[in-house]
Image (cartoon, rainbow, N blue to C red; front, side, top):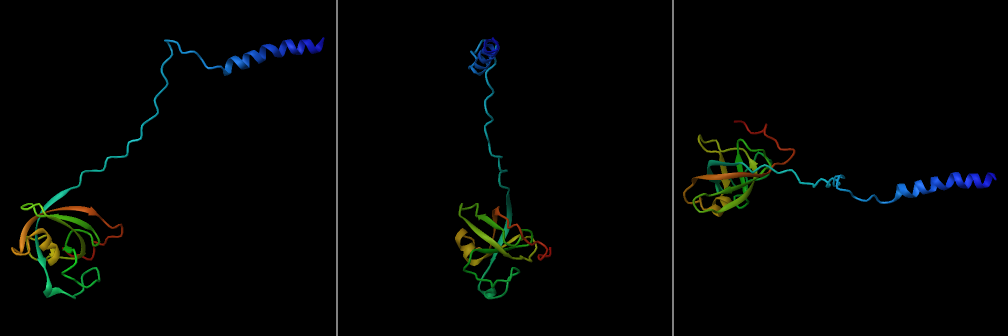
Length: 155
């Protein structure tokens, strides 16, 4: 008789286990399951555009060492700045004709009051300011090197 009692006692437990694993039927009072969160990458801030006065320097300085240690080459797309970190990449745009160029800051300067950027001759030619010598340009910082060094440029 003990066998039958064990069967009778275990039978309701089996039904309860099966009932618990069954899929519940939705009723109007049940709330809908929460939607998974949608991943949205953080918005990157809009690049800051500055208007500055730029000039250029060329062949007279060719071969001289720049602040970064490399020799100045007027045919490369480089620039000098007193405020931007060495190694930075910036976009320089001539607002009069819409031409732009990306340059790497490899030197400090210019040391003429009112000017903020000295472009290499090639960079000045690409944006169309080589003939006038000095022009207002728009600059946008594209990339800053993590080990950039501002201390070497005295203001």
